[in-house]
Image (cartoon, rainbow, N blue to C red; front, side, top):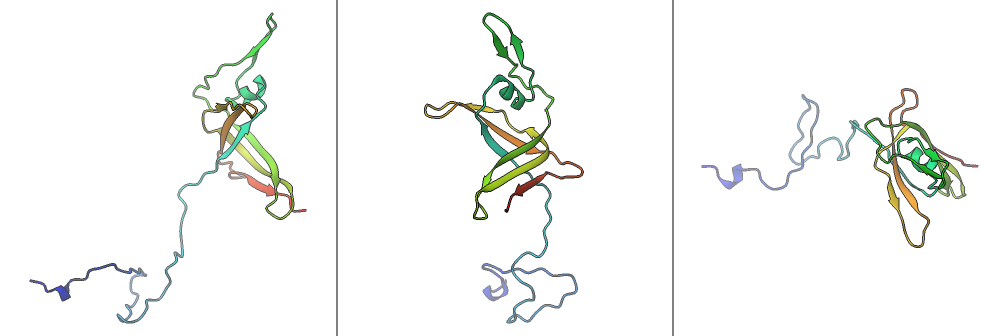
Length: 156
């Protein structure tokens, strides 16, 4: 039967090293640090979210998978589009521009995404004290030359 002195227990600190590395004495600190030295990324993503407040039929339809707007002369004159997006997903080049004060000055900044798609079902938002909006989420697809695109911030 093993005595208590023959069992290793409690929290352990573990190091790994290449095979063939000499083990240090029990009272010496192993070589190396506690911070990872190498890592790989198996997936990455970007999500650009905004609220569209220009709810004309044409803008709403564009966001909604580039739907076709039908105009009826009337009376009454109307514009309409199908709310079902279907299985084919429209792709767009996306430019999202605003201002940034990250560098101490209020200057333009923009996301430039060469290939993007509407990554969710656009959600209408209606609030008493704000204009009606359409909550949107766009995600990039990888462009062979430009990747996911760029964030460009004007500095002067």
